[in-house]
Structures are given as C-alpha cells and as structure tokens.
Length: 192
Image (cartoon, rainbow, N blue to C red):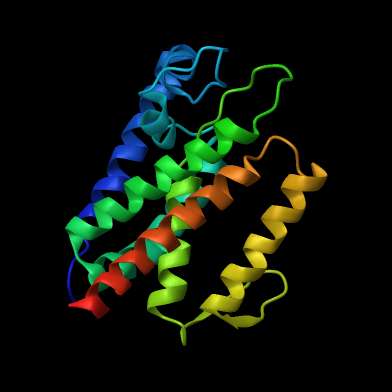
C-alpha cells in the first residue's frame, strides 16, 4: 500500500503547532489566527490559521478527518496535487470566512476544517462507491451522499446561526475550493 507523506506531515505539523499553542498562551492566536478585515487581519493568517486549533477536541476531530480521508485522496492524486488541493481548500475557506464574518465583535478563526472539507469533497468525487459510516446513528452512506448531507447541514447552520462559534461558511468554502480544483483537473485531462 502506498504511503501518504504529506498527510503525515500535516498531522505532525498540526500536533507540533498545538503544542506551541499550549506554551505560548494567546500569542499565537493574536498573531496567526484569521482575524476579520479591519480587525487585525494580516495576509499570512489565511494560511497560518489552518494550523491553529481552539481545543484538543477540535484538533483531534480535524486530524482524524485528515488522516481518514487525506491518505486515500493523496494516494489517488499524488502528493504534489494533494498539496495543491489542500492549499486551495484552505485559501477558499479563509476567503469565505472573511466575506461572511459580519461586523460584530471581532472573533478569530482557527482550524484545519477548510482543508479537511476540501479533502471530503475530493474523496466523494474520487470514490463515489465508498461508504462512510455515521457515528450517530450508525448508518453507512455513499461518500457523495454523506458529503452532500454534511454540506446541507453546514449551510443550514451557517444561515440560521445554529451552533455559533463554528465557521460553517469556511467549511463550505473549503469544500467548494476542493471540488472546483478537482473538477478543473478532470476537465483538463479530458481535453488532452
């Protein structure tokens, strides 16, 4: 079975950065989290915010998803394209978050969820017959159905404000970025 080196590097870097977060208190969040435009935003935060996490649970959920879906996607498309896919997803998530953040109290955004959602979209396109098992209730769903239902929930939660404190539109931005990039690769391959 082929290795997935970039996926493993992402896991290690995220764990190391979280360790730094635990020792640096709020310094890393102030400097490297994604802040709203006009409220501390710096261009590098588009990337750096994807390596910060709000809690150990937040880190664990994101890294479990990156490990579960990232390895398969990286093996299917190769490491170079995997880096492109993850990066585009992170950028698209940050842009979606910046556009939809609103004008309330400035709150920083952190997490690898945008990159993870890009991987979820790629997984659904690359492996449409694979099944993803839900935890509650334990129902196996085809990957495209799982991703569609998850995206619909994110849209609903984002529009209604359900589960505040979660960057629902960033998740959707990452998903859209990953799907659009993978589809553009497929279109170019058909033209050759």
